[in-house]
Length: 564
Image (cartoon, rainbow, N blue to C red; front, side):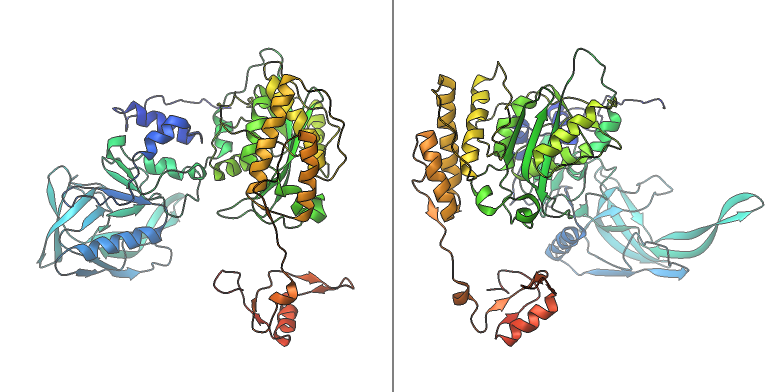
């Protein structure tokens, strides 16, 4: 335990409350509605900064920064000037702040990289080269700064040191030196390098997307106001990357007021963890502490990998299933006021957050109860959710947890495609339409997955409306994919259950004959191993030799231009 100090005043954007509010939302990973519209109104992909103003472009990668600076340097008239660094001693562990060969021109925008002993500039000050001369010691570059002052800049020497112990104390020993002009081209710098900057005019180039938590916040928060900000492209939901561990650390433990309600989320996923991608849900379940539950398959919008073998989920099963965003529109209202529990609950909620943002939807995720040391079992998402809920019943750990908030109203309707036909779905008195939608979705899901059709009871007004909503969503789902014959058969049975036409405007998937495709000279790529009829594993090299012997042309990578 240690004291926590909360800073309440933002000084950099002190005169722009709207900018401050937007940045607060981004820091928390939630940029909603009108705030996102106001921010994206600053997008202008064709913006070119005026030559007589100091604008700094922030980009996520060195590649973008180098290309931007080189492009701007080539636009300047006049000869390119070159200054070479001088190095001596042991520089093996030294990372030079300036490249060995520095190229610039009069008129170049530069950033200073040291603190001037005369306090004329500090590390990070932006300026413009206005003149170049020489004295008996070497180059003298005149740099003008935004406040109108100018200074003569000469080569600076960075000492390279290593720690040494002497007489019971720790000192340092100079082992090398690096001398170069202490600036670099700075029409653009990386977002990482911009930390600590305060800028009146900023261009943020999000090309390639954000790949690190907090990166978008750092970039935008360098600017003092919305008026001085230009985006090269709009901010997308997937650009909002936050570290939920930080949010958990900063939150005070929730006071126990009244009776708390709990839920557990179970997920089955496909795909691997990567730098720019994460596993995607293929089944989602939420088990509630009153014994009810809601489950649905999810269309991950990618191949299913080993989902058929691992989970018993086929392509025909997910063709008509909702995306996570569509499913969340149905499930989220039932989660309000419930605190999620689970093993690795931060990672679980973070994965949901990532996938929802990939689909363009931003919502606040709570901080759940982490079940440390618990073991979760189950082949289906529902079994895993119920296992987590049972484990929570035996624990008292509540520190730092919070409940789901009431979701914002969305115009999107949805349906659920559930494998669990006998599960009791939750009922909320204040949400009769949604409660009916969940019941109807459960029954329709059984039919869509090839199960028996349940007898249709007399509809209440809410259930009739729910059938219409489910039918509308099914038509949308069917129209956006090529249907297999199995999926068409299932839809026809769903038509009978819903009393509505679903197949109008749909397209049947025409399956190709493999013998017509694998002709001589066709380029083919093997992405893994295979198993022959005897159960022997066939490695990629062996398959490539077999393909070559058959007249095919194996290639190393899967691309649109290299494969047929």
